Length: 115
Length: 113
Image (tube, rainbow over all chains, first blue to last red):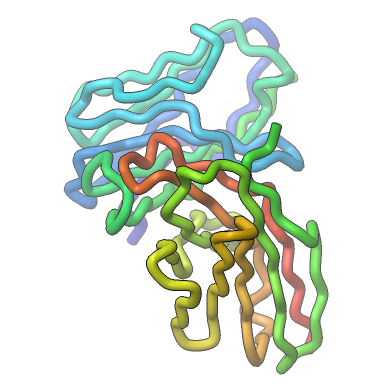
């Protein structure tokens, strides 16, 4: 059973619309993250949260807003969608925000296509 | 500017051969280097990781060789199997925080029976 659930798996949106990508983790982790993988590009770090607080934001655009309603939830709201936002968005989690011995676990991703 | 580079972009080997995937990095503060494997439609999953206290890490058929001076590392997959066909990502970060985990662009490996 997947321990990090991302919904939906596939998402098609029109330019200018708004979508919310859902992520829930059932690993009991305290830190959650969003990464993005655009076509032929590396996985790119977007946000990290620890105990529901924003720790780091590497996304330049305010159109991307993470939302953490519960400790094990970290949704991603994207407004005013553009075709360049088309990518696979991966949610991840770890025991805490420190590196080293912590393992980063990923969800299966939401594949977003903006037309 | 890409801080973690991988080569080759794609690699095809015969079953039973050793696949060698290369990775290099820019930031000398990086001290944690995980490799993740991604099968189509699945989640990226940690395969093996190394910290610079050693220059080699082995786990079954998977071995990381690390050269701190040259800021290079490589993943060797011995006795490659068709089930190893996947995309392999090298990543790097300072051990202080996953917020700085930087991924390479990946190597797509195909193992031909």
